[in-house]
Length: 122
Image (cartoon, rainbow, N blue to C red; front, side):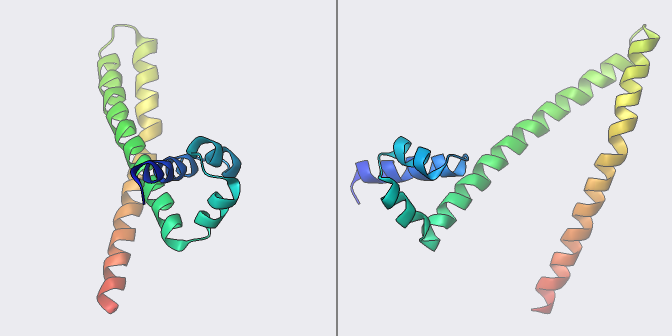
């Protein structure tokens, strides 16, 4: 495959991974709609789209984790504020979020344990 065609395929993969319709992805990549349809019917191509989407989600989660750290730092700072309403708002935000976060962490641990048991049985 030529370098230009490879670049077009990458553009098609990224467009589809980011939610573009087949028609939109075709226009963005330079492939015809029919060629794009053919590509999306191939399992290896669909896997490339899925892998690209996973990579994009991973990057987004990383940014969210960074923003969450900054948000927690901000809430901690606000807890030391002289204004009682600001302190109360920060306390409420922390208390509202903490149980949800704990639940997510517990679910992840349980899922990891189940997956480990499942792999051990194979």
